[in-house]
Amino acid sequence: MSDLFALSAPWWQFVLRAVAVYVVVMLLIRMSGKRAVGQFTPFDLVLLILIGNAVQNGLNGGDNSLTGAVLLATCLILLNLLVAWLTARSRLARRIVEGEAVVLARDGQVFREMLHRELVSKADFREAMREAGCSSVEKIKLAVLETNGHISISQDDDHDTAPDAD
Image (tube, rainbow, N blue to C red):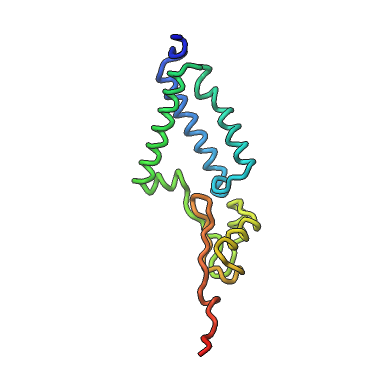
């Protein structure tokens, strides 16, 4: 019964492992791009599960104690709270962690090189247009890939105005 709570390594090694794995996984996710994070497909879910499994031993170092699990979970939650606190108070931290919004189209002109760079497919862009109720590219006033991976589209009202029938 005492094995349930006995750590196989000093407590600070668990904290160090949690910080290291958290930072590496955050960097990898950040490098994967906004669209990969914003659009979760079944493949992304499988990837997330596999990443969790891949880093498990790096986190716990082979320790199977409840104390180690609680220590790691607490450390990861505190790291997440720290990152949230920093990004809420610092524009630089927010830009580093979340990135910046990217303009994908303006005034009816789609920036194809930005779609390509941000890994946004034409199909994804068309889907965002449909969700915004935008029937043609010419009606787009501004299309922005937000930091959460969502594409926001505002339309040019001039294209929608018809002459009044007085």
